Structure formats: structure tokens, C-alpha cells
Length: 75
Image (tube, rainbow, N blue to C red):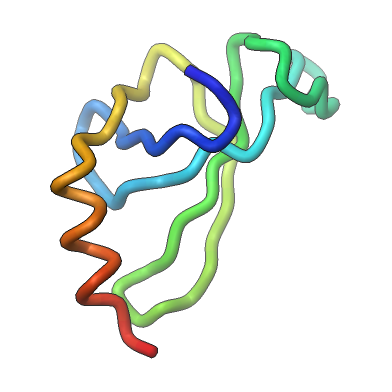
């Protein structure tokens, strides 16, 4: 997993872009892989969101899934 990769929670949900890696205190450690990542995504209404997730809770998203979602996003 790298900054810029598209991921999804193993339990489901929207495709999200990895923005940065965080240490245990929540400090940004840039592109160095750690236990936590900050991800960003858009809601169905087009509102941007971001949050921290544990790496073990994420899988790579299939490109066909997130490309389809992008094409349906409101302008």
C-alpha cells in the first residue's frame, strides 16, 4: 500500500484514496508505511471526507469498482 492507492474497508464502503501514513500518536509520517493511514473519499452526495484507518482493515479496491463510482459522482 502506498500514498495514492485506492483502497476499501474489508467490511465494505466507498473507495478511498490513501493520503498519508500516521504513527500511533496521529502524527503524519508521510509515505513511510505504518499501522494507520489517512484516507479520503466522497460521500454519495459528493461531500469530501477523510479519516484514519488501521492498515489491517483495508484491502486494495478493484479499479473497475472505483472507476464506475467516479463516473456516477455528482458534478
